[in-house]
Length: 302
Ligand code: ADE
Image 1: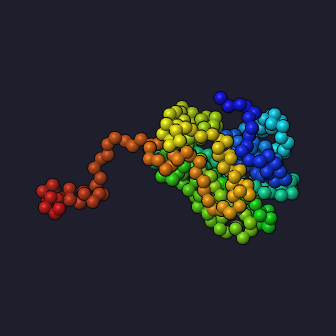
Image 2: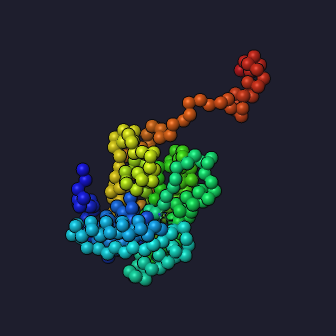
Image 3: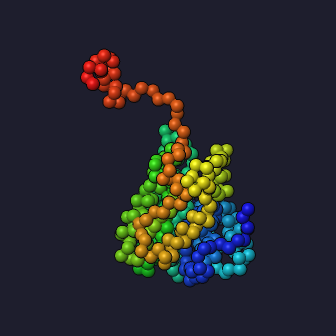
């Protein structure tokens, strides 16, 4: 059982005092946990999301929680659809104008839906790629051009466990693999400006009410802990602490990197996707060249 107002960071209190961060998707799930930990460490945090109601209820919860911790920090709420270039430009400029700087950008906002790839319509594909990959690109570009290019900064992007392909999430897997590659590119291109760019890749076993609601009847967390080398599910706070590490001076020589936060799940071979039992004959296979000529002819060629 989790204490509602338990101590909220393994890092030194005040570590991020005087810093300003934007957390996209900051009203729910992993984003909310990141916003809380940053605030707890003294950072001014702007949470941004497309959905106004989710932002408002998330902000209320965060403020109540912060009061109980006894810590003081500023939480600012801004609505922004990261797929929209003008809204992204305005999110960054409003933050810089209001707080005079932008130290940290956490590109957590994203989403997907479960579907066989063959059944994904173009509109759905584009929506997922635009949110997860293009949205991350736009946020990075604007943070860099409007502030970090001349002042430095730290960016953390969000990927997922897509290392062995992403059955039933082909759109998101492709987009997140793009984010991992973009992270490497920007880590190199922006190193000259003292901008570090890294990424975290949470596994599918990070439990949050938002994720559970997203997948509804699929009960994606049922029994998943037993399939993971560390024999348990993970928490949003375990993602948040990795993000805070990457933002901290403790990671000052790390850039372009992606950290997996999955209890070893992606290195272990337990399938998360059940293959159909049977497979029809493959007429394009090497073997079929011989089969076509009949078994006797095939034998004589071996
Ligand atoms: N979180 C999920 N989708 C988003 C979007 N389009 N903009 C901002 N935050 C999001």
